[in-house]
Length: 395
Image (cartoon, rainbow, N blue to C red; front, side, top):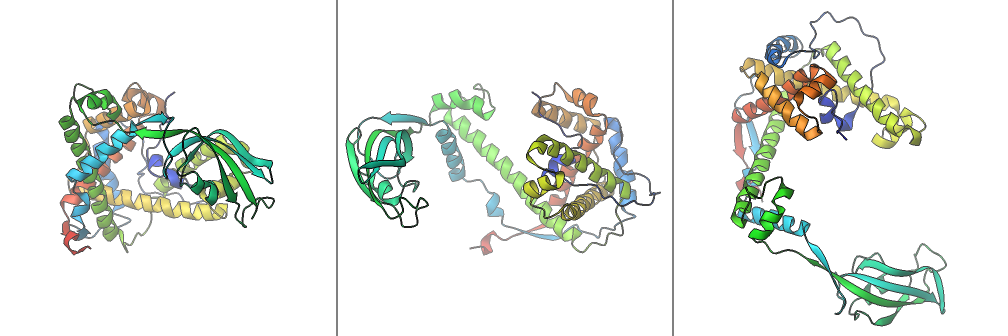
């Protein structure tokens, strides 16, 4: 089954902030529309300059280049230890369990056991189980029983005297002395595989890499280091941009928002939250009940107020991104859109990008175009601010 691709990619970015329409009627906006329309991929670039011109009538962006951004660069350096820790996590993910039927239990062991609890010689409700799995020291049994499981020999029946806590939820057992007859049947030992060339080739596909590309341990170390460095670079860029954007937008005077685009955004998000509610409607008495339960809003009005504010924050960022792009000749080509579209098609289970366009329309060219533009502007901003490395001053 294909995964659902939202008709507007923005919804994916704001999945936790689905919003409802403002019911107030607004005057007709005579400003040229900035709402995405059906366009070919090679037509998107022209909309960047056009929309930026419209956005500039609502907000002015001061000179931001060279602004200082504090960043602990050491947080984004990948060390050999990071590589080894990540590889260890891969090994542990493929660990197996060896059931040992001999030996003595210790704290931390996961065991399989039979037990029967008796109060004054009579079994009590909930006190008996067969082939139960338990990790000693987890605290899921009462304290006396948990501690009594340490040092037991597998296969040997043992009586463990226990006293239930005075605060135990079952008043019939609270504070009572009982005896649990316990037999540990096995100790389940986790076996982490050895890191060697054979393990690498056998598990390469789990990393999305062919066994022809990863043939030995050194290949794996190089692959993991590259992966971690790519992730660190992405996280660094996000942090730098978010910090810079916060400075750009702090106290920025926005005279108004493009009303048609804002309304279109709210409508799209509202349609999606309606669809989400319909999927679970049998469990809720109303949409308002669903929003209260799923998103913890006291009322529909509170949700709508939050939604309006959040949508405006998103739109302000889009306005700023677009203006920076136009002012610095940052553009998006048809190849950029089509290649990104193919990646999305593969991820969401479509045959190709054309199938997405056939399903959702050519507005997807504009939606994907903006996602590409956003990433390009993030990189541009990161290259044009001054980084103040705080690594040496942090403890």
